[in-house]
Length: 445
Image (tube, rainbow, N blue to C red; front, side, top):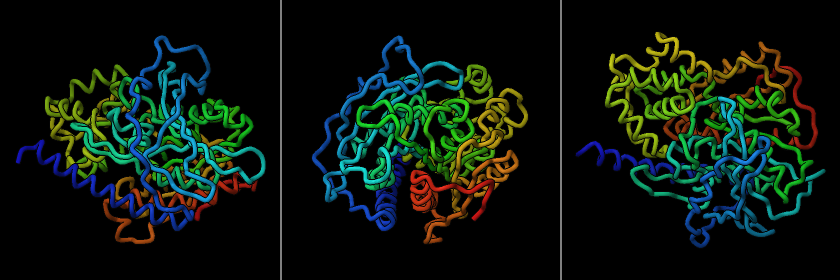
């Protein structure tokens, strides 16, 4: 069997795994949040790809200003006594600032609940930072929300399982805004693993939501994310105080945080999801010319070919690559992690993505799954210690294993840990929106 045919076969198997994971997490979230099971709706209209092309030049404005918006038909809704959930979905393009300080257009979506908000004050907004979808434009969350599932090749299949979380938040009455991240759907490369890019994209999505006519500009805001979204929200916890001090932020939930990019790459290298290292190299090469130049000298032809291939893939196909080793990608046959420790230029840009060097300035709930097979729990433990050493004013850390330990340690373990973490996060976010005081200093559960 050729490599391409083997990869496609593995992708089909992985797609079945996504469906299984969706069913699994739907059941868990449904029990926790009393959300009805998803019901199919009529096929959505084709995605308007022209929406994702920013105007040139970009309009003048501030981060979070909306460039354009349109109605977003969704592939899945949840029935409720008050009507369909989500009642109204809006695709948005908004301004942000990348890690080099340059303005950039980012896309995403906003979900407005149909039911009347019964809590105090205006309806709150949760800026939800999604997990890794992939590096191809077709993997953007706002596109998958409309399509439900994409079977595009060679990028591979992908399902929008983030709805398991976002629709439960909508069911609770919160407005939900979610970013496609920089380069997700829009021109350029999705800069996966870039600490500043990801944080700014999520923070500015929250700002953008407050500009929508259906959202009160006085609404309270929280950020929430797991996995890649955990990295984005953890970085946002460190940056929001100076980047967006005006944001009415009550707290941040962050879980499954890949806080140490080099450690994460070394762990995945030769392991499941090793192809994701290609995403990180592509993102850094796109954002930092000096890094790109150095990477071009250390990778062999096979490594360069692999990077080019994964740049157009969704996570399902990339995960079907098995357990690739970066030793096969380099001229020297050293692992990329080893090259980072030896090369000051590579080291500079990889360690620029470290989280834990700045003090969080808002209340934070940090969670980790001790059985996580993708982001080892040591990263959350070390992040907690670093933030406490920096003098975090309000930090709660909890390790939450998935109830079925066998599944928790399997390939589903990372997703399963996210569901467990979000069950805890929902209660914590509710308390923050209600104005209940968060823990003072550091607390570990």
